[in-house]
Length: 124
Image (cartoon, rainbow, N blue to C red; front, side, top):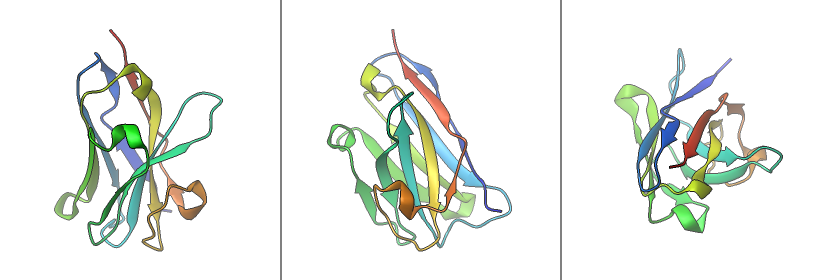
């Protein structure tokens, strides 16, 4: 079973940066689209960004388009979400998800495997 694993979350002050990583032991992510989602308690999980196997990138939240960058390093079997100029409203649990069909979408249903999430808290 493919199990993505996120890392890189934590507590950061407003204006700071974090880089989230998504990898999967024993599975090559090269051929899959990888999405990043985020969710607040009691809220719907929303799509943030996605990168296809061909490195096409998509951003689904207007407020992150100028601040977040998704990328992948196939040699390291890792997908990254670089988050800059973080604000308190970016406080969520962030999840990475794998689409076996290599289909990027903001919709949860298009993804087949999900990580456990990593908490990002932006606070002074």
